[in-house]
Image (cartoon, rainbow, N blue to C red; front, side, top):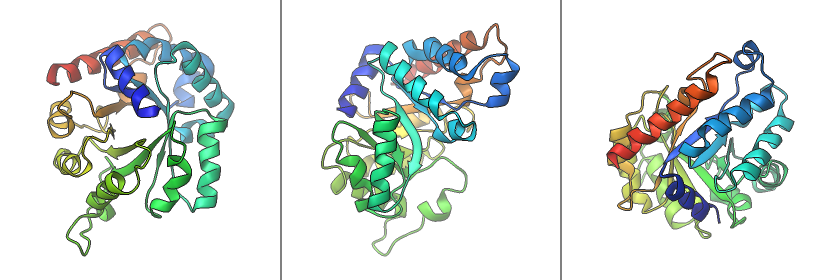
Length: 267
C-alpha cells in the first residue's frame, strides 16, 4: 500500500523530503550530460535523504523524453525500492478518460502515486483511488500566488472551496485510505485549517525553497502528533543547487541533506 510504503520510507531515512525531478534540457546539455545520466546521478546523490521522488511529467513530455521517465522510475524501483515515486501529472477529466490517465500513470510509467485535480468532482477520482495499492494526491490549496482566485472562494455553506475539497477527500473520497492532499507551504494558515478538516491524511507540500515557503511555519501548521503527515517537496532548490559537471550531484546531495536536517530540527 502506498501510504504504508511512504511512511516506512520516512521512518527508515528519518526524512520528510520529497525530491522533485524537473529536468531542464538546456542546463543538462550545458553540463555535457545525457538525461539518463543526470537523472541517475541526482537520484543516487539524494536518495539517502529522501522519503520519495516526484518526477514532473511536463518536463519529460516537453523534451520528448517519456522513455527516460520510464527508465528513471524503473531505476528508482530497482535501486531504492523502499522509496515511492509520485508522478506529478495533475490529471483531471471525466471517468472514462481518467481511467486512461490511471493506466498511463500506474501501468505505463509504474508510478506509486499520481497527482490529480478534483475540479470535475469526486467520481473522476475513482479510476485512480480504486487502485488500492496506489496513491492519489489531490490538489487542495496550491502554492502559486493566484491559487486563491478560485480555491479561496466562499461557498453557500460558508466553507472555502479548498476547505470543501479537504472535507470531501477525508469523508467521501478516501474509501481505500490511499489519498493525500496537495497543500502549499506558502499558505501556512490555510494549511492549519486543512489539517483540522482532514484528520491524519498525509499532505504533499510544495513551495519550500524556490517559492519561499517557511519550513518551521509549515511544520507547526501541518505536522501530525507522530511527527509525520507531511511530504515536503523541493525540486529546483535541490536538483539545481549545482550546475557544473564536477559538483552538481554533490551540491544536490548537500541541499537535500540540509533540507532534511532543517525539517528534523523542528519536528
